[in-house]
Amino acid sequence: MGDRWRSMWMGTIAAIIIAMVAGVVMTEMKLSSAQKFSTASTRL
Amino acid sequence: MAAKIMRSLVRLTLVAAFLFFSIGFVQTGIPGLGLAPAQAQSAGSVPCNWSGNISDTQFWRAIRKGVTGTVSIPDRKAGQLVQSDGDELRAFRQGPMSQFGGWLLIGSLILLGLFYVGRGRIEVESGLSGKTIERFNSFERFVHWLTASSFVILALTGLNMLYGKYVIPTLIGKEAFASLTMFGKFAHDWIAWAFILGIIMMFFSWVRHNIPNMADIRWLMAGGGMFSKGVHPPARRFNAGQKIIFWVVIVGGASLSGSGLALLFPFEIEMFAGTFKIINVFGFNFPTELSSIQETQYALMWHGIMALVMIAIIIAHIYIGSVGMEGAFDAVGTGQVDINWAREHHNLWVQEMESMDEGPVSNRAPE
Ligand code: HEM
Image (tube, rainbow over all chains, first blue to last red; front, top):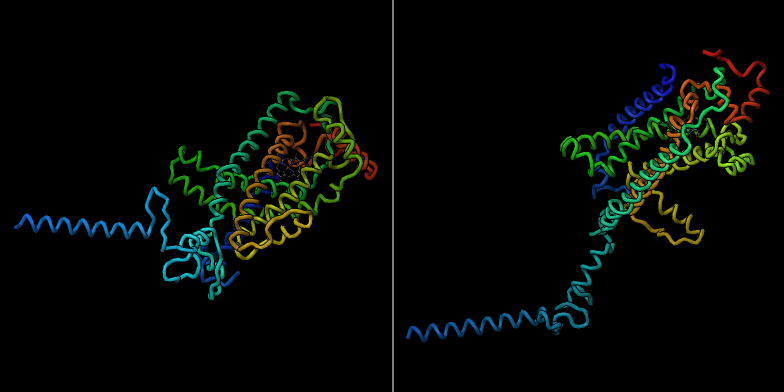
């Protein structure tokens, strides 16, 4: 039984780790929505 | 004497009031009579001609309808005071999109239920032999589950964004729903990267087995053998049905990823005007000049539509890969499928493996 679900857990744990890394990177980029939508934005 | 003074005062106020209101009527027109103010807006111009030949109403109507002026600050989108496409988008999302999406999902569950009642679980007709053959190696299984787990989380958090508000607050209260949705929104944004990686890896692992061929047409003509017992149209590693799932996941997944990235980085990643230009080559008439906000609105709309269609299709995939078919789950579970299952569903693939293999195809003794 353990064997049957092992691949599933491996994939799920990897997905969560990738999500955590992505979360840290995206938070570090510090693009708050206030900045993204600001009228001072020069990005067009 | 006093009475005389009072009468004069009342007369005076009446005259003043009459004069005052008659000026008012000249300015605004007399209500109910349809008499247009003569001097105020003759030929569409307002008094003193301060805004040229345009009346106030015309002026504000144009602003309300989203006319874009010029501004000298860097952010040119500030030149548009009122952009109300968002209103229409919301009406579409909460109206037809939610409704059709809901019926699509419920409909696919009902169809699967009917299929289960009519056909039952598709069994291995020659019985399980206990001997197995490796169907997917550990890398392929890992890639499958990386994609599948992230898709399921994306689907749940995404459906919560569209439908959650109708159901969940009544169950757990508004505050808990707000926290849940905020957490879910972050989970959705971050887990998306795992899904993107998953479909890229899945594409490279399986694309060479998913090129359509003549056997696929025969498989489809026989309905995949899914609707009647004892029918097993020949198939190689993936049958036509699986190839359809593969391409839906790759093309649909890429489209979901693209529109999702456009939503993660609004005003930076914009793709709809360019896409519309290409589509218009085939005689369509989509707008090719889009403001940044319109780009984001199209991305949101398309992302939702694609997601609902994909979820409906994947529900069917999950059904056939688990309860719907005996012996299928092992392919992505242990990777070892029963040789009889393989012969029934992928006979040409088993033959290829046998002709390639020096030894016996089965590598696990009966338990
Ligand atoms: C969560 C429950 C899921 C289960 C139980 C499941 C089960 C399976 C099984 C048993 C196979 C192998 C079929 C065979 O050996 O011939 C398979 C293949 C595959 N799965 Fe899944 N799957 C799930 C979710 C997903 C999701 C969410 C996606 C993509 C978004 C996905 C994409 C694929 C693809 C592209 C294939 C190869 C083509 C095919 O066999 O249809 N799966 N899955």
